[in-house]
Every structure is written in C-alpha cells, then in structure tokens.
Amino acid sequence: MRHQKKVIKLGRTAEHRKALLANQVCSLIEHERIKTTLAKAKAVRPLAEKMVTLGKNGSLHARRTALATLRQKNAVKKLFDNIALRSANRNGGYTRIVRLGQRKSDSALVAFIEWVDAAQATEEKAPKEKKLKQQKEVAPAPQEAAPVAKESPPAAKEVAMPETEQPKPKKRRWFGKKSDQPAK
Image (cartoon, rainbow, N blue to C red; front, side, top):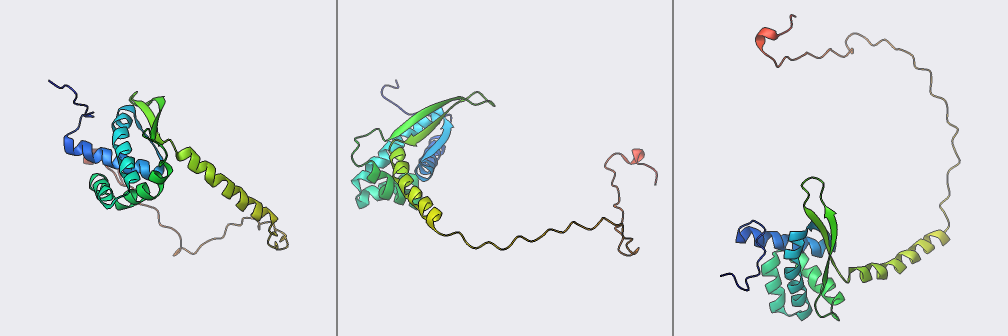
C-alpha cells in the first residue's frame, strides 16, 4: 500500500525527477519567478521551501546540503545571501503559485511559481531608480552639434560595369529525377 507516500512522479525516473526539480529550483532562485506546468510547480514548491529553510539556518552543513541537492554554486550563494535573508521573519510559505490557465498547444495547466517576498524586494529598488532618474534630469544635457543640412541624394544613374566585374549568373541545380531535368 502507498499510505503517506507523497512523491509527485511527473512520469520520470527518480534520477530524472531529482535533476528536473533541482534545475527548476535553481531557475526559481536565479529569476525569482518561473513559468511552468501546474504539476511541476506543485512538485517544486516543497523542495524550494526546504532550500530556504536551509538558507535561514546558514550553517556550513546547511550550505553543503543545499549544494548537494541543487548542484549549482551560484544558486546556493544567492539563496543564502539574498532569498533566505528576505524570508528571515517568515515561518514557511515562502513560495506562491499563480495559475495562468491552459497552454494553447497541449492544453496543459500553466502556472507561475514565485517567491512571496520578491514583491518587497522590487519595491525597495524602486526608490533608488527614481533618485537616479531625478539626478539625470537635473544634470545638464550634453551639448548637441549643430544640425547638418541634409543634401538630397543624387539621382540614381545606371553605371555600366566592366564585363569583368559583372556578377555571374548562378547555376541552377535540379534535385528531381535525371529524366525530368530541363534541357540546357
């Protein structure tokens, strides 16, 4: 009996499934939000939340455990340095799944999976961008060169090229049967 065996198989072998989920979590860490099928998003969520819990722990053992699962150093570094710090005051529920409907090609249910605290990170960046825009507006504009009067292009004249420079006609290739070849 399969009592309390909660493994979403996704029609893959165990090793293929582990690699797929690790890659999905790494993409989620790198891009903050990924678009995938609903079944994969539901399978990725527990692994992503476990990785954030390891990141909140912050110990060397936790870092090595995350690296053994994800297999990408840059993703583990970003997880421990950025994402875990943003989620420090949250007790679970670090990800959100937003359903998008069906894909046109195969009618699979599609969803976004994203970090819940990602919205706060973008709001914090927004005031910095506004300050930069204000500084650019205040700064004097570089001196522009005087506009150059545009001359009308000369009338197109046909210039005869010497025969040596004339482009050669391309040979036509025939890919049909030899009996159907056009006469030369």
